[in-house]
Length: 302
Ligand SMILES: Nc1nc2c(ncn2[C@@H]2O[C@H](COP(=O)(O)OP(=O)(O)O)[C@@H](O)[C@H]2O)c(=O)[nH]1
Ligand SMILES: [Mg+2]
Image (tube, rainbow, N blue to C red; front, top):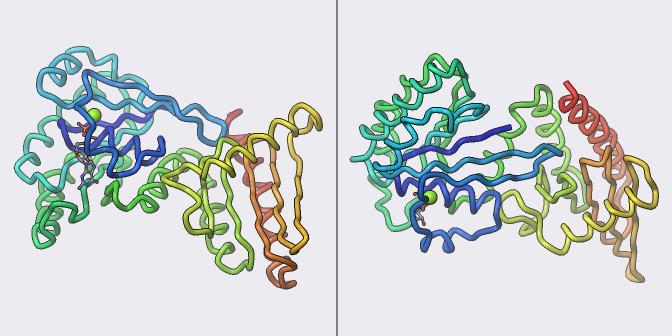
């Protein structure tokens, strides 16, 4: 699957990628220099290799790749980005996106589009202007995409959890049916008296109910290592596509890890026995995630 991030220079493409997928903090992005031509990264998600193409947005490069439309070929999801802190750029962004849509038309492609109205925050910016700019950006840009499978999002690298969810939902949107499972799981988690993290085996968090376990989509390093080690044991010693692992200490602290279909991992952390209601709900959740893993597998093989 190919996701293309596009937008004028400085709108935040590289920052978005780095904060959501590469464990960078918003502060880290302040020293980024502009992307030259384009950068490609691969990111594993739910057993797929997701390609992310960050196209440099400076005038000279824009011209260059507008003349080489093949770089845009094969995009499944197009993410045009506009900088809400720079309202003077909206018209120029519109022209740029128009040009891009022309290229897609010529290539006979119709990607799904998620417009990011980006830098929706007041980091070095006046609050009063922000909503005015949102309105102006919508007025100028929204009608461009009316013939597409389209949605827009208000995004900021300073709203890291939100951003991770937005990317997660975008990635999941290409698999029919998966979204309802994720939403169901999200609700269930609130009702269970244990800490639970659902991720893929590479440590991309899908849902969780624990503060501070992830930055962007990426699970904390120690837990990621644990999942990775268990996944290796599953593969090399159990040689089965699903397995579970349990640990506990003298105080009754427990950790359980379930791996379903070599893709989905559910980490459960309890401080002692949990109430029966929670345990019932946990069991339901585990069953649902088993189904979820099956759905992903069949989506891959379709
Ligand atoms: N306030 C704010 N600044 C951002 C946000 N995203 C990126 N930036 C800043 O915008 C500048 C340009 O970002 P960069 O990712 O290099 O833009 P690119 O040229 O589109 O790749 C950097 O100084 C970032 O720190 C955001 O959501 N909010
Ligand atoms: Mg860049």
